[in-house]
Image (cartoon, rainbow, N blue to C red; front, side, top):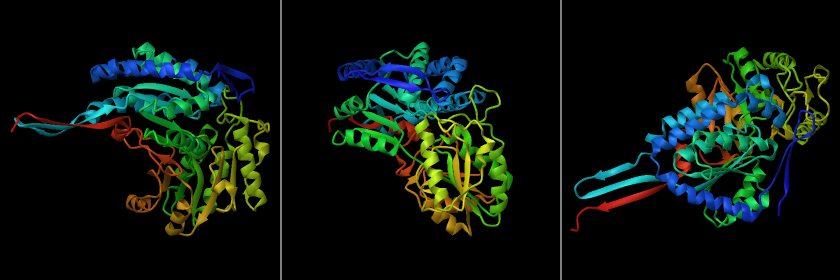
Length: 462
């Protein structure tokens, strides 16, 4: 049954884009075309696939002006930040650069008697279900290595960013990737789940909510379809007694507030050694107070609306509950007159918080952060681990050995020292606990989009 998907712009509340979903029969036909096209695509030389994918990303970069404007309308990011092209190109360049080595066979023996090796074989058709917050970069994380490895890709993008999948298809096809090898589709949840349940895909990559990840796992149950799931986060920052205070404030507050706090690895809770706590909070309040909330098309806007009013309402509820339970809100809403009670939401810093409050335990995904003092490393480790999520942790210190020791005790996917809210394409992007499972980027990213296949070739009969 055909349904309609709408993108409601957070800028002004109007319907910015509207698309009809595919019926199950239409979706099945699209997957079958992808399956047939993948055979020829996988037979092409690796160098040719790399060339065509790079040409597609170059075509996307050439669309920058249009893409930046569309992103502002779809999910509210200020145009002054220029889209996601720095990360898109950095990740593409790295993943194309390591492809030959990452996908090379592991040769165990090459003698006159035996040839024994392990090759990496594409899964076939890969489904990418992408989120709206960084709609290009998160999709690219899987699309680029999947195509290079010889898979065909079916992309289902978030309703909030309906046009992103269309632009990716337009660009990749312009670069020479065949139309059936990369397809953008608009699917309802029930059709998506039906396809997964039919074992239509060799691998499913999903970035989104914990509930969404659970639905993917349920749909795949019993099919043995491989899945990669990047789900929620509640990433902590820990400022130690020897930290560069100004650098910590600048980076951690940017990590908490950039993109209106709608970052997978954004900072959502901060623990500061008690000797620096008062100074950190004072500087943090000043930093946030200098932000400008407003229309994302205004040149001086540094924080735009949240992608949807319901997301902003979630944050307001967490703040209200925390204050009712004894927390103190330090940012005067009068500093941000653009806060309209809808998608436009004033940023907030909370102190006198504790781990009984929702704002310190549940994912916020918005421009709010709680700050707590800690007495020492042991207390900080306990606080950072007292969470259902595990994506990244940001440690601030001048002692790399100390950071490494603490990092080994934190239940997380990535440990940063004196940095946060960043994906290094040379390192594996992964998580633990309710953040999900899987591996993107780095050489391990190619392992996710391929499967091992062993060859034992005996050249003699005796």
